[in-house]
Image 1: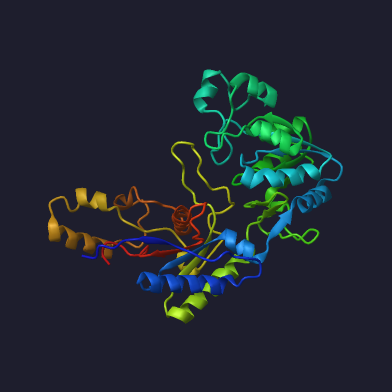
Image 2: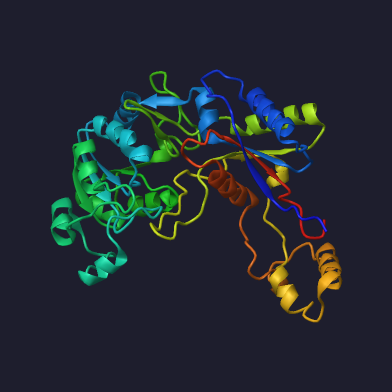
Length: 390
C-alpha cells in the first residue's frame, strides 16, 4: 500500500518588496524547492501564498493620517462610538489611532469577557463568581478594574482597557449589547469582523444616525493610500509605527496568473490560493484565530466546495467489522471508490469535517507557515485530494 498521505511543506522565499513580481518569485521558489527536496510537482498539488506578501508586493499600505482623513470625511465634527474592536495591538492599534485622530471625540465600547475571536482578559468563571450578567451589565473601565483587578490578556499580558484608553485618548465602556453605545452617540463605527452586517443593522434599527463598518473605511485611495474595495481596513496589520498593511487587492488575478505560470513550467494543473488567518481554536487561551475577514480571499476553481468523505473509523467498526489485514484494506478501498457523490445526512460521513475546502487548507497553511521567523510565506500541500483508495 501507499504510505504517503497529505504533506504540507513550508517553502522559503526572499524578502518581498513593493513592485516585486510575486507570480514569478513564487513559481521560482516552488520549483527550486521541488528540485532541492527531490519531490515532483503533481496535478492537484496546492500552492498557498500568504496575503501578507501579496499586499506587500502591491504596496497596499495606509498611514494613520490617511485613515484619519477618511474617517473625518465620513463623520465630520461628531462624537463617534467605536464598538466591539478586536484586542490586538498588531491588528488594531494603528487603526484605533487613525479613527481617534479623525473624530472630535471617541468612545470605545469593548466586549467582555472576550472579543469576537476569543481574546479575553477575564474568564467566564470570574464573571460568574462576581455575579455579573454579561448580557446586560455595563461598566466603565474604572468600574471593571475595581471589580476584577488584574485584567491582563492570558498570553500577551496587556491590559487592553488601559491600552485602548491611552492609544485612542478616549473613554472606554464595557458592554456586549451594541446598542449601549447609542446612549452616548448616534454616530458609530462597528469594528466587529464576522458579525459586522448584523451589528450594523441592529444599530440602524435602534436609531443610530450613521453606522460605518471597518470594511467601509479605505475602500478607495485616500491621499494616495492603499485600499481594499471589499474589506477596507479589515484584515490589516501593523506595518510601522505610523502605518498599516491592508488586505491585498486583485488576489483572484494573482492566483489565476500563478496557476498558469506553474502549468507552463511543470505541465501540471496546480491549484493556487491566497491565505490569511486560519480558523482554529486554541484550547488554552480560547482564541480561534480568524481575525481576517476570510481565511482565503482568492483561490482557483479546483478548490471550490466541501470534502465529500466517508468516516474510516465508522466503516472499520461496522461494515468491515469482520475483516482484517489485506482483506479489510481491499474492502475499504472498494467502499471509498463506490461512495455516493453526496454524503450529506449519510451515517457513513458522520464525524467528517463539513467545512469549505479553502478554510481547511488556509488553516493548514497558516499552521505550517506560522506567524514568526520561519521565512515560509509559501506553502506547498501535496496529496490533499488523495484518499485511502488511491
